[in-house]
Image (tube, rainbow, N blue to C red; front, side, top):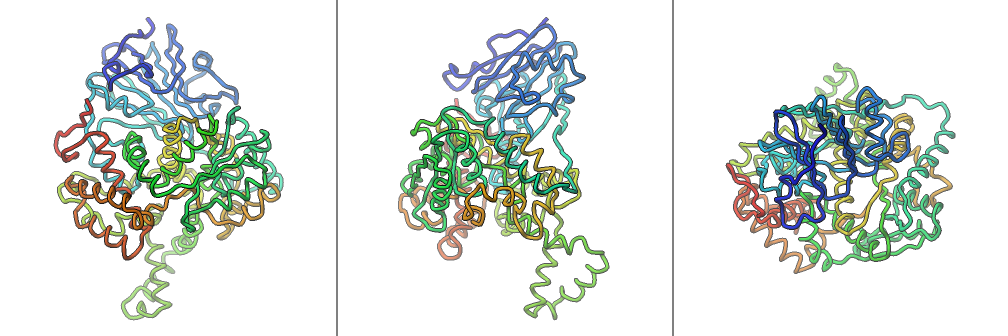
Amino acid sequence: MPPRKRENNFMNMMGSTASVQHFTIERQDCAPVYVASKAQYQHYEDEALAVFVWGRLLVDNESANAQQLADKIKQSASLDSLYSSFSGKFCIACFDQSSQSLAVVNDHMSIQPFFYSQQSTGLYLSDSLDLIEGNKATVCTISKQGIYNYFYFHCIPAPLTIYQECKKLEPACRLTFVADKTPVKQNLYNPEFSKTLADGGQAEAECLDVIAQGVEQCSTQNCGAFLSGGLDSSTVAGMLANQQENAKTFSIGFKVDAYDETPYAEITAKHFNTDHQVLYLTPEDAVEGFTNVAQYFEEPFGNSSAMAAYFCAKFAKENGVDTLLAGDGGDELFAGNGRYAKQKVFEVFAQTPSLVQSVARGVFVNDFIGKLPVAKKVASYISQADVPLPGRLETYNFINQFGADNMFDETFLQEVDTQAPLMQQQDRYKECRDDDSVHKMLYLDWKFTLADNDLVKVSKMCEMAGVNVEYPLLEKSVVDFSCTIPSEVKLPGSKLRDFYKRACKGFLADDTLTKSKHGFGLPFGVWMKENEQLKTLTMDCLNAFKTRNIVKPSLIDQALESHQSVHAGYYGELIWIMVILELWFQGKDIQEQPVGGEEQVDVA
């Protein structure tokens, strides 16, 4: 018989459930599967299958509903065999009545979030971590490893979450659940990268065509675009302007010159004649929105540009926009981040014969010659090159700079695997099917920079503002196309995004093509020195955070002192992630030390 829908355990949650959808899948000889969703999902069931679809699913570039997908699954060898025909932002759950197995799979960039938890009472699936954590039938314990990873990444990368018992899907992840066993995991999107390019001019023209199709696929009637003035947002805004009359674009400005990008946004807006509007953010706005933004995320999230994304999305909503197009992804597809070029320099030494490396170390890395100015620089170069990728990317990570022993409480650290974050990065880096270091870094960043960080930031802040968000540059067709461009064409020498810039020449304004990379960064460190309200909020949070015995009090004192005297931006970021963590704990009403023994979250 087919799965039976009934009132499930998710009904016992967090007050009103009027906007939450529920479904239960009864399984033979094991606990049920409980499904809950904040967003609307599609559902189809018959005697053979129960299929659920979240988000926007395309099969062979055509929109597909749950019933159409079920028909496709029945006609194919497996869900895996169909995956190459999928695109969009989606998550699919498919229960096979005959085998009593449940397969869950998501899109290539994990744009559509999804969480699960295997508990004694059943398997819980949801697009919302809060719906699982808020269920009175589940146990959700704050994870020390999750907190440590948060300090390392400023977010908690999949598959871990802030709760020990809950996991989230990684990009292009297929999980298969059979009975109460640990799910079997498979990565379904690990593309090949081309080594050669037959016709560069044709590829440049195709690049713009593919992006135009992505923008068209993502745009709606009441549509607008984020516009920072950089390459990515300008490209998306320009494509939207070509497709819609009086296209709306939105920017955030700051009265801090080093952070304000509005002049570049104005260049693009004028170039494409968009209906452009700018909102200037003040320290007072930050004070007003700080707590709400920090507590809206379902787990601690420390990207300091989140607040700017929220205010920009809210501004767009107030101006009649229902969907915003974001430019995220271009740097990670076409090699636009400075670290890619920097690491190419170090890889020259890392790839030289071991004998040459040994001689160079013997000559330059010693107490006598190493004191000479030129030799000192060479020795520094060698010491950095000796750290293999991807670990070398984390040279300036707070934990690597200060040392975990100097940052964290000793008792807290005893229950943490300090190597786990690096091992996560190494696994992803090695998983890439190409041996080119730039492509390996791009593949790494698809997960850790995009899926785990930037897309969470923009998606959640748009959700908070009440607007939908789409990512045209991350449409699967665009990602697939980027893989056809060889590394040395994307990034010849140190020329960041050289191919992309050549493709956009004549389309984007010349000043846009030559500007340096920036984005919607927030001048928190500067504001905290100048605004008393923000300073008071920060100090109150840090004093409360000291009592949680996660970091050593001396770390907080050092960060505050160095913020005032050494580098406001760098230490402001460290202060930010601690304040955000404390505000998140307060939002969950966690009054006591949150990471000891059997301490559990209680939001009843």
